[in-house]
Length: 400
Image 1: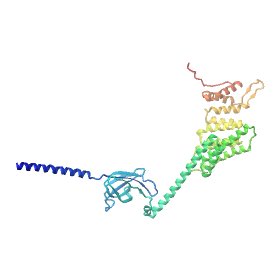
Image 2 (image 1 turned 60 degrees about the vertical axis):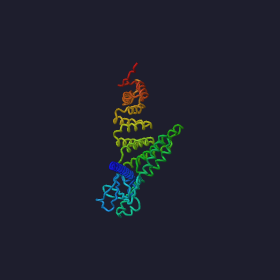
Image 3 (image 1 turned 90 degrees about the vertical axis):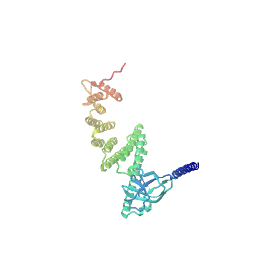
Image 4 (image 1 turned 60 degrees about the horizontal axis):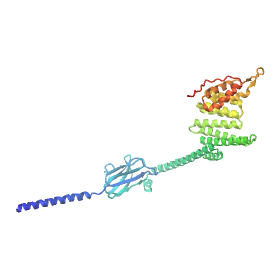
């Protein structure tokens, strides 16, 4: 009996001890501290983000860099930021490494359990700069100066682009004075940029056209002030050509555009030869567009009443682009005023090349709905002078 009780008591104590041990183990598990986390940003001595490398944590303050043990490593992203967790509470040295070389550090970075600590590395701070070598400081100052110059240049370019965009919009809307003012400001700030002079010339040409139109509507004779406006526009286009030619990488598009517009300004100012030379230069700058430039020359000269010169320019346009219908139209229109009447037959005799030009226009333009009015006009002219209307175009029959 006594033994059985003893055994029971012994068994009871064993169960109690097991419970105590279990509770102890449970209490021990709950006592584990929550890990800490870290986040921050790294920038270099000029204030720009360091976009590669890592931040390492260590509690080993006695070992050298090669043998030192690190408890945590966090990569630096392309924005110069880093973050991570799993840090045991305690005091650490935080070190920035780039290409396995330490470039900055902070000591006594203490983490409490569960804390998310921000740790930034600002290498533009005075303490960091003061520890740089004289050569490093010199390089830093040179870089800062260069960077400041680049920033200033970029700001200037942004301002010029804004002026250019606004001026083009004003020219398109007919606000020529505003466009001229903007481009005068731009060309003063950067006189070596050809495209700015082209935009100024476009605004001046638009202003001249508007003034000429107003004078014509009022029945006034040619105004010297209007001619002066055309001359100013041509001068701006010439400056565009010169500035572009002097640049490190001349742009043929700018050269061609400037000469093309210069031709128009010169023709309207009365300088037919100068206009022809300008269009020739435009065609040389962009041979692929020669047909367009020669046609522009022909149209400008025709509108200026210089019919002989217009016919010559139309021939050049046709030679450059034989399928350009409007060039044949300009040629025919430039030649038809020279038609005469045969005294024997009393029939109208068109000058050489006129009928052929008209016939080619009809053949090429008949398929173009936008040209139907001029096609009918030319057919009427050909019928009136008793010429045959030749066309290979066949209209598509509508389906019933």
